[in-house]
Image 1 (cartoon, chains in turn red, green):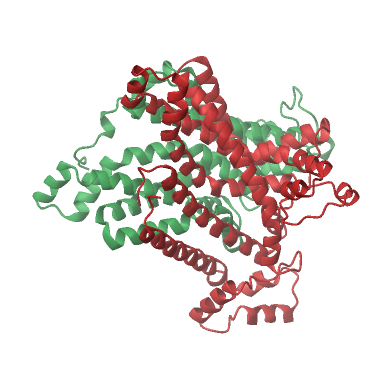
Image 2 (spheres, chains in turn blue, green):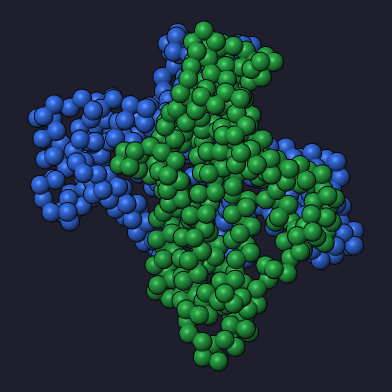
Length: 340
Length: 298
């Protein structure tokens, strides 16, 4: 592996600094800028004593650096506040929602990556021909689609008008109870497979189809565009000409040599689009009533549930930073030219 | 004002770009969409046939939920307001927000990237890590927090998006400046004793702008989409402003019986975003001789 231990340590230290910075910014936005942060924290219908309790919980009677200290300490202890909507600790809520969102985003990303690289290569090989132009136009349309609008339209057409795909929730609850389905890991696809429960597995898949298609649009469009332009440039390189002159079959050159040069930057840019996809997941889950983190934050937004909104979004920021680190490591691992 | 030396921007003739466009029909389509969007956005208040309905001040419940017809090509909403008028007026807000977000981010990003790239060292590293922190922020959090503090509105939406948008330009600028600052003319400027600020702003800046400006052009479509997403979630532009994202969310509840309320604003959004993306690609390809020499494009 071309990553030195020193670099890894440096990156992890940097990760902690970034997370620290994210927390400080959140602290400033919610505790320092508002005139009376306890009002936000206690909720819209709080009574006087609840507001007083929130005041004490937030240590607003102490100097600002002590407040920051308590804020960070509470955060590390996992005390992220209590959601007014669910009346549960925010961190607990988030952790129980996480697998649903991961299942959705990972599926969407994997599909976007495989289909996108394939279509991008097809376009590059047929550069400037009709197929290339068609694929390029489709990818532009995909990257331009408003996610929440597409979710609404697909749900209306396939879920309500045609009734071919069930809309909403992760699994049919009565079916789950009837077949004795018990979530273990909360990754329902995996759970259903482990319990050899085919009806539930199919139901989960059916309910994932529309959300995954919607969520896939942006990363898929991005992957096609990236792969195409990188492959078009790579195909001009001397080493490709050399391999062809040498008599290697075109397909072999494409999949063994060009693909290798294309895939690393594609992964890097897909990783960077992760943040965008999380916002996308929020809207997709909200529209499809799919109970993941996005749905959780979305419901919190609609009910102005500040502890939940903040906890959810700080969590997303942390995931995003970690994902960036992981993407960089994968990038270096598959592309030996990248050395850190 | 005297011109900065070594400027490349002025040497790109506009008619050459236009000729480039005419040879590529899809890029031309993108260009036309962008021009139409900008023109409609500018003149929207003067071409409305039902201005009170568009602004949301007048309503007629007897006309509610009318499907698309000759009289109301985009139908009417839950308050009987003509959707075509509302969508037309909405273009103005998308335009203002997109220009605001990208413009504000450009100013912040270019200055920070320039300073970080040119000075380098501890200052450079600190500035770029700062950029990373803001980049890790989903624009949503800022929009929610700012909406709570400043109130929802066009300006709040612009600030919320720009705060998590500028780091992209700062990063790009940082990379460009790092390659520009070792150019012979910068060495020459140093040799004749010009000050740091003069070199940075008069020599390095003009020569580092093209990549970041191209990127800004490419980002206009995304800015429009993101702003609409915030409004859709209820933390962007408040009612009764007919911003497209808001119109879509207004139609959400009625989607199964009156699809047109959400459908047409979304279609407008989609077409505008496609236009900007195609046009951005055109600019990018035009400015990148390597891509251009291979020939083709859309």
